Image (cartoon, rainbow, N blue to C red; front, side, top):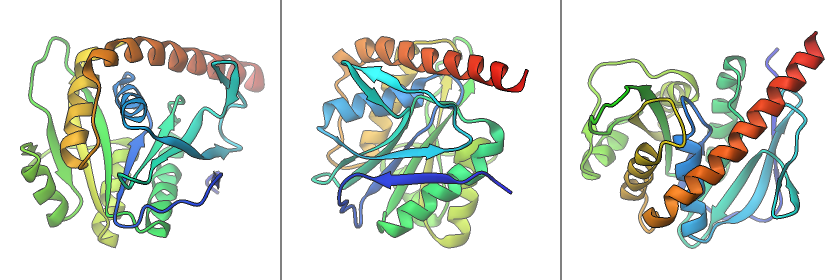
Length: 237
């Protein structure tokens, strides 16, 4: 049995015909940093929390307030929802996380899910590319001025989103970016945030503040992951 991931909504959410951003970190922290930057730039509000018995029991304290490490933010004017997480999920949770995201997207009649995955490439300056779950999703990649991936492998949550989306007809775009795997990777975070804003009308990135956000977010993510590791070690010793 796969562990269940629960989404508790804290307010009424209207995102019909809109967008959902997958902000779970993959290699490095660029995806989480880019989505956090977009949240701060475009006036999102907390709309829900995501939890599971398989998640480490930790609270992330910001500005004196406790927070779940994985949360849902929305901007109803832009019709954009974000799953923002300070946790890098174990591989055993990738399938259920993707299916939970797709189910939530279907419930709220989301038009497009945008995810991302990093490829480790030290010192690389290769362009960002995209892959779509459907022909209409691939058209969206081209319309954003991005190259479409023709051959390759997409792992983890983004890969599952693509596979399930291709069967159900849900438009999913996965952005593939390059990173050295070290943080804070300001350059790849900025490129990813800009590419997301090309796919999502009205969304924007405050690049000057992104570097500062990258450093702050990386510190919080690293701390959350370190605490998670210590908890696992003590739980399974």
